[in-house]
Image 1: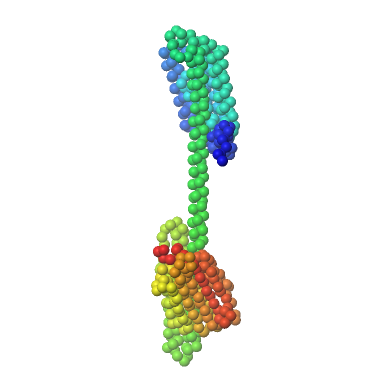
Image 2: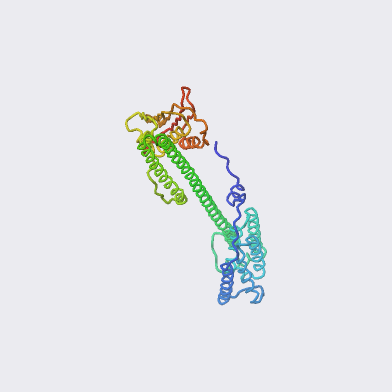
Length: 453
């Protein structure tokens, strides 16, 4: 169905934005406002005297000083045109009427005609409320047009124009009366309506600039919020990294310390080797902690886009080294890689690889701290045959039971779940029906989960 035609009142209301609640802020009266009023006053007086030098100015018998007062009083209204636009518009209309009745040739001077035009323009462009502005300027325009018509009909204007036309031998298509009335009304209508339209266009431009500034402010606030959230997220990431690093190395140190204690008297060489591994592990832990704390100190710079140097973060390719390090410290851990094609694990995105590595590291550290297990298994599975079903999964199994008196805070498992959730992964943590404990995390790959994909 064709859309219903909009009424004239609706179109006019939309153009003048009568329902818009935005209020254009009024700038304070400044040097420029006073300069406009003074310049218009001086120019108006000068042009009046120039006109007087060319022809006789009929001022209704008013003295010269009164004519100057008319010019200056009208020009000085421009000082308050932006602070009190509606009031200035009404005063300018009253000024035009009074001067036009008493000193019509003075009212027709260029300076005063400019003042009246700018006053009506300012009433529309700077008014705080659109509906009141529209009503006021419409009333002024109708009143002025009626006054001009009255001047033509009853004030002798038509008779004077007709006499001049006959004296000059006018021979146009229309009678002098029709030509005079239509031309005068058209010029005045164009004058007043033009001031209103230009003022509304200026108001719309100011409204658009205000919207752009508001949007820019909103975008800046959102950018600040995103930077703040990035800082928080980075701190959480570092906290998880720190927890995993400390937990892993403390668990290794505990194993070696226990081994050294048992063989200290009987096999001092093995005890010395275990103490050396403790020293190496503690140094490694301190080094990684320093890296993480250095990153934490530079977090503000990171949020502002300043790159921060970091050591290479572990990936899935480092899982065999993690298991080998654990075995070197006396734990019995097996590693198995299952992938749909050779080298598929190398194509997993680094962020996902880091997540699975840290989860494996935490799971193995938990076995050392909280389990009686004597063996454990790490299985990495990578399926990348179809983007819809592609995934990377790590499973850590052990054959032990929870060790009494070693219950943790639960932050380790919470960290695992949060890491997996950040990649929309699923987590299974709990005892197995056949004995032992299982930690299994599966993260979908899709297209974004494959490096370079």
